[in-house]
Figure 1 (cartoon, one colour):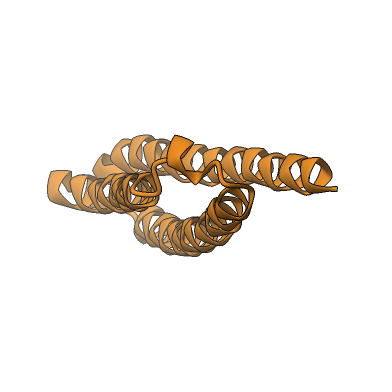
Figure 2: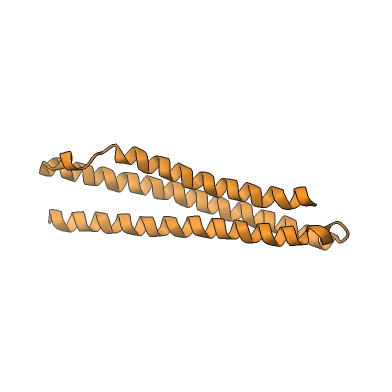
Length: 134
């Protein structure tokens, strides 16, 4: 039964990783697309308010998508922590915990924080650059 639980936890960890990748890529790609579109609108937004409104709509979209991605990553971080804590406890119960360095959990948390910073910084850049160019 332990083997089935172990397999289930590792499968959940793999699914968690895939979901995190989707959140990260979606946010970064959207940020870059919004940066390109809004940068293209800067010239016309000086004379036509319609383009300025569209630029602000992209800003709203950037904020919403980045917020969702950040909450998703925070939830992924929490889920990974719970799953790994379960694995560590299972390893302790089985007497094989010396083969898994539980300080890896801190490394995972740092990595999640870095992913969140990448999303935040690309979002900020995608908002600021077009308005600075304008």
